[in-house]
Every structure is written in C-alpha cells, then in structure tokens.
Image 1 (cartoon, protein in one colour):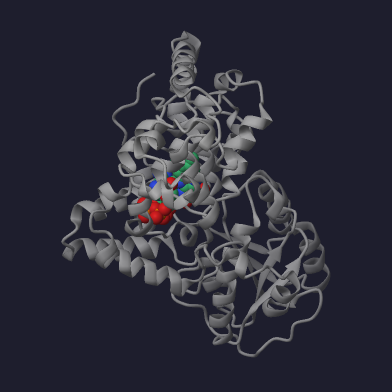
Image 2 (tube, protein in one colour; image 1 turned 60 degrees about the horizontal axis):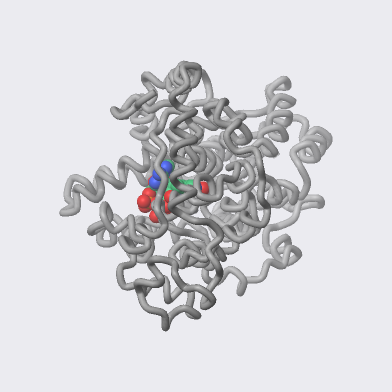
Length: 475
Ligand SMILES: Cc1cc2nc3c(=O)[nH]c(=O)nc-3n(C[C@H](O)[C@H](O)[C@H](O)COP(=O)(O)OP(=O)(O)OC[C@H]3O[C@@H](n4cnc5c(N)ncnc54)[C@H](O)[C@@H]3O)c2cc1C
C-alpha cells in the first residue's frame, strides 16, 4: 500500500484533499481511527459519534465503488503510529487538518511530528482555517480565496480490492461490535453526504424563505434554518461546495436577503474556529484572562437542574427538553441557555460548556467554546448581553403552544402564568430570581470592564481574535 488516507472528520467523496491526493497512486487504504477516550473527552458524546458513524457508512458505500472502503483502527494515534511504523514504513499518510479539543490535538500532534520527521505525512487544510501564521488583517480576503478555489474531484479508484487484516476491521463489522442502538437516536439528524445535499438543496430553493427572521424562533428555525451544522462539523459536505452553490443561487434567487444572511454565517463558522486554532488554551481559559476571576464558586446542584431542564422557567426548560430530544436548537436559544447559566446562575463556563456541548449533534469546539465565552461576557471584546428568559418566552412563543408541546404536564396552565414562570406547586420551583440575578451580574461585569488594565488587555485580545469586519467594538 503506497498511501494511507486518515479520516477524522471529512467523510466525503468530493472536495476532500487528503482523499483526492492520497488516491492518486491508486494504491491506498482509508482508515478511520476510533479512540474511545476521545469520545468521552471535553464535550464529546455518543450523540456525535452516532452521527459520524452514519457519515462513515454512507462514505464506505461510495468508496466501495472505487475498490476501496473504510477500515477502522481501534486505539489512539500512538497505537496507530506503532502499527504503521512496523507494517507500512514506506507508506505516505494523508490527513486533513482538524481544529479540535486538547485531547485530540495533543495525541495527533505527536503522531504528526513523528511522521513529519520521516517525511511520511502530508497535511491538507480544512475549509477556511489558516494554520500557518494567521493574520486577522487579511483573514477575510484569504478566506474568500480559499472558498473560491475549484472543488477537488472524487478520489481515483484503487487498482485492486485490498484485503483487510487485523487489527483493521471493515466498518460493518466494527458497527456490529459497537452496538449503538438505532432507536435511541431516531429523533436526531442522520449523517451522510446524501442527507447533506438534500438539506442544502431544499434550503437554497425553498426553506430559506424568511430565514433571516424565522431563525430566532425555536419552532420556526427547525425548518427554516439550513440544519447543515452537523454536516459541516463532520464534513459530509465541504464548506467550499456549500459556499459555491450558494453564490450560484444568489444570482437567481428571490430570497436574496435571506441567503446573504446565510452567507455571513458560513464566514462566521471559520472566523470562530480560527480563534481556537490560534489560541488552543481557549478551551480552558477565558479569552480575556481577568474574566476567569469572576466566577469561582461551583454549585453542582444548580448546574444539574439547568442541564436537565428543571429550572422552573418553562420556556428555558422547554428549550433544553427540545435539545435533549433532537440534539439541535437554534442560535438564539443556545445563547439564552448559556446566558442563563453564566449570568443568572453565575456558574463558570468551563463547568457548563462541556455539558451543553455533549447534547449537540453538531458540536464544533471552535464555534461552541467561543460562543460560550461570548454569551458569558468573558471575551473582553464583545458587549455582554444578558437574555431575559421571561421576555424570550413571550417573544418567541406568544401562545405558549411550543412550550406546552415540549412539557405536556403544563399544557392546561394559562399562558401568562407560563410566560411569567408563576406555576407554584404545579411545576418545578424557580431556581433563582431572574431580575435580581441579572442585575447583580450586569453590575459585576460592567464594574470589571471599567478597570484600566482590563481595557488594555481587551485591545490585545481584539488584535489577536477580533473580526475586522465588525464596527461595534468597544473597550
Ligand atoms: C452557546 C452556543 C454554542 C454553539 N455551538 C455550536 C456548535 O457546537 N456547532 C455549531 O455548528 N454551531 C454552534 N453554535 C452556532 C449556531 O447556533 C449553530 O451553528 C446553528 O444553530 C446551527 O444550525 P444551522 O446549521 O441550521 O444554522 P444556519 O443558520 O443554517 O447556519 C449555517 C451554518 O453557519 C454556521 N453558523 C451559523 N451561526 C453561526 C454562529 N453564530 N457562529 C459560527 N458559525 C455559525 C454553522 O456552520 C451553520 O451550520 C453555537 C451557538 C451558541 C450561542
């Protein structure tokens, strides 16, 4: 075997640099590394693994048409390194870059450096992320260049079908051994490129009508947002392909405003991930280091009530129940859920962030961790916003129909009581006073921001991470 294509995400045929270049000699194996510990690390969960396995099944079927298939190696990167070293010392490894959590980065970087020294590994960039010397002043232009490049074609076919020997396992046998229950995830999105293309097409042609305002409401967003996030996170379709199809659609669409809103978000996707790529410590430390002093005490009981959706605030609880059922919720509600944990409950984001991430099918550490920090007021470069769960309840679900659908046991209670969270012994007791806690949080956050040293550091944070497109930066 001349080449190994190592798959971490990006289980797709088209526009997949590692796969395309690794297949050129027509003598390649495709390996997915399954590391059980990775799936239990910071924010990772079986919900996400299940989605990725769908993607791999779809990918495996398509690779078989090219005399290839997905082979699974169980272990960590070090185990894989030893195996390659012994059995395939002359083989070239091809891998797409991936910005991920510390567990993966440490494990992968050792593997990468080992084969770099031997000149046996080729690394390819992933969507718009800049790994070498990123420069925020020209970042947006570089991103456009990257997105405008022609799509890479499907891989070349292997000349012969390859025999799979232990410790490698064919994907179907691996899935049988793993025994994830199909039933458990039937209400979650399914993975695979076919699903991604179908969502992209229906969104660009029809579902995007009204996207720019429907995205705020959890029940309308379910159908009016693209729902591409897990596909983008796990790479069942390339961001470049989405972007290029979007540009073509923008020429002819009647929904220009909506699709321009969508275009902005594709850019944000990479803008956020770039922050974690540039500063991996963000997984554990606030972007503005002085903000880590703010919340020191952990109240595990409050955190548990929050993540189980038992806070006594029906709209907030409905959002969490909905998220727990389907693994997805819209942006505004994610922001509100996080804002409640950080401002009203005053809990350190480092404790709450992984619990929330575990519930998302589309967990993308670069976006999630940076958004969590923004919604907790710890970046120093974004204006803090404290969401009122009572106001959002009235604004997003005036008749409380959606809330009642998520929490049937309160379906007979009058709408006003639900919006105002005045249900007394008919429902969970409120875990905090929303007005008092918000006031205290606002005062504490703004007091810390008025400090001269805080402002000085905030400027440095902006130079490293701030979008140059943004006009409303205030220190
Ligand atoms: C606390 C919090 C945590 C979040 N965690 C994640 C996460 O783990 N993974 C994730 O993909 N998104 C995350 N988001 C951003 C956003 O909520 C989701 O991208 C969006 O809801 C996904 O649904 P969609 O694909 O239908 O979005 P669409 O509105 O159709 O957007 C299309 C794509 O643009 C990107 N995008 C959209 N909004 C944002 C944003 N605000 N920042 C960066 N990229 C964006 C995503 O890739 C998304 O799939 C988070 C937001 C918050 C407030």
